[in-house]
Amino acid sequence: MKIHRIAADATSEAGPDAVWALLSDRSTWPSWSPLGAHTGERPGADGTPDGLGGIAQFVTGRTRVREEIVEREPPRRLSYALLSGLPLRDYRAVVELTPAGGGTHIRWSATFTPQRPGTGWLYGLVLTRIFRGMVTGLAAAARSRA
Image (tube, rainbow, N blue to C red; front, top):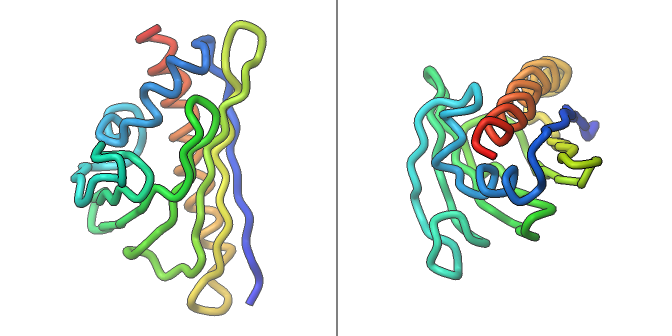
């Protein structure tokens, strides 16, 4: 089956450290994104809720997804893998923060393979819309808190 790639970009007036402070704390995500409630399920290997290996759940409407942090490079890169909640295989999202003048360029991207043939375009459309809300919300929240 075809691997789908999606992405959304935004730039914040806040510096990378300010953006990272929000991105690296998944409990803040519902306050600045289209995601619903957050629950930490398992802390990361370092004992922090969002450390490498940390698992969290997000509930948005009737959808409950579980995600695990699989890469963490402060304040530049955060990656997570979908464990359950959507009919997708090999889903991995990467959020990259790049200094841009006095601010930060944010790129939220993902790759996945749909479990059901012919549905990849639909999940790509929906997830791209969510990612746009994620990057614009993160950029605005970091700017207002900086």
